[in-house]
Length: 437
Ligand code: NAD
Image (cartoon, rainbow, N blue to C red; front, top):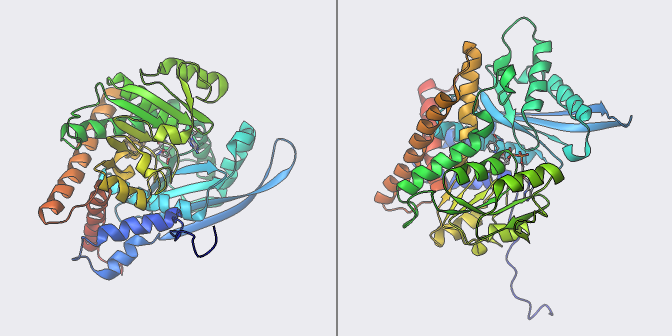
């Protein structure tokens, strides 16, 4: 095609997570005209950004330098809280975005934490356990006093787990002997101060939020999860457990995928067999009890509930039109771009946003922190009951906010409603505390 006949090209979609978080924030605060401009400006920015560069001697004898980040977005409502991600694509802007989403998430689920996030740019799939242990210890040691039980409290995220949290606890305890260091990190193993229910909390909270939202009629004609067809993208802590819990609640899992590919079956996948296949091969791809499908196909499956549970920017301007779910529940952080949000909203597909739908993880992290401070261990039933109450209250607050804004004449999506709840709560505390000095 020559230049004269070429179709006008649309600008490339900006997929920088920090820019996306800023757009979402700006869109929400436009509905809060009473907030002072200076306060809005402050709430938008992270209060502290740390970058550490550190060498590690790997199992093969070579020495490699890694870059680690820890961003504290806000401590207005309490100490910073947020996971640590190990992934080759970790960038400072991604960590800054994830830290700000943590601030809003902790406010929506109403736990007394601010927001933070950390990450190390590395590829855990290519590393031995001893490499990962050394990376973790050196990263935590270099962060020094930036983390602490009452200042900034890490947790698991993509490609980190309870084992990583145990190393973080151990390293911090070596640096601070003679005191109760358990509350410095959450998502720990059960026998090192972990909480019952933390491992499943993100997925269970997502289920509770869906159940509440459906019972309140967000999807006409779909009153609950029972009998619903569910597709899940990402098959780790959030995704695999969500698939199991939704199935236990009576849903049919019609498609799952992970970083290597996916599998679909309209009659419902045999999840135990999928899990066994993943255990044996490292991936859901190649599972014989369904048809092989790429990630895009799983996102575009005809289903009732789509659960993105992998990484950011999975539902974008270029593929949002293909989504055929009746409800999207974001177990992952940032899976939907602002352009995709607008397209889905326009098509009448509600999105339960990340800062609500996956807040069960940080909610039970808060429970773990409280148990550690009290040297207690609560029963699983107690944890799950408390989680359900918190998720339902948060879901109600978001749906009520959307309705209240609607009565004022503006139609907003659930992400904007959730941000309005969150920013309102954080701003309220900032105003009560006053600007220091
Ligand atoms: P995880 O490491 O346990 O699992 C990640 C999964 O995503 C794996 O199955 C991986 O194969 C898959 N994946 C990676 N790249 C992919 C791609 N390009 N396409 C499809 N699948 C891909 O991580 P997790 O803890 O389950 O985190 C997943 C998401 O949930 C992240 O967005 C994370 O921030 C969010 N989240 C996690 C928690 C938690 O408590 N773990 C809490 C809140 C939010």
